[in-house]
Image (cartoon, rainbow, N blue to C red; front, side, top):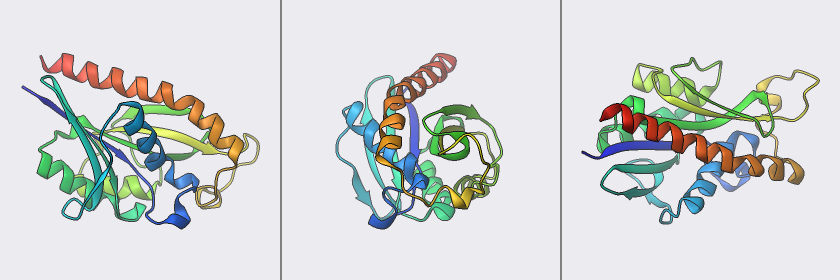
Length: 187
């Protein structure tokens, strides 16, 4: 039996949002696709997303980046879940988190949205929050607390990108460990 997994990178479509903090999920997925040697992303109008997939005897992993705005991403992800027949517990959503310092990350399961519009959309579409989230910190300074919209739609500074990219390897390994754990539990 092949275990199927969906890893989703959230962001907003379009060149003007490409370097926004809000797009760190999509940015990470582009890095992960190259690191894991997946084929180039292909656009799929039916899925409302770009995707890349690799399958072996043990597992199939589908990387996807919705082509919709963040607050509508649940629509795209629920289509992918249905078409690829992926159990909810095998879905990983990668997104920005303005409550976490830049470069830090947390992998969690079955958590509320904490006001993140993309996650709100996904929870509404699934009718559940029982999926995994890789939350990547995008907060600039540890001192002052700012509202999320004052942070997430701003572009990263080059030195911030470098700091976050240095942690991508660790993030990828954490995803691999969690996927292997799920496979072991399914045996």
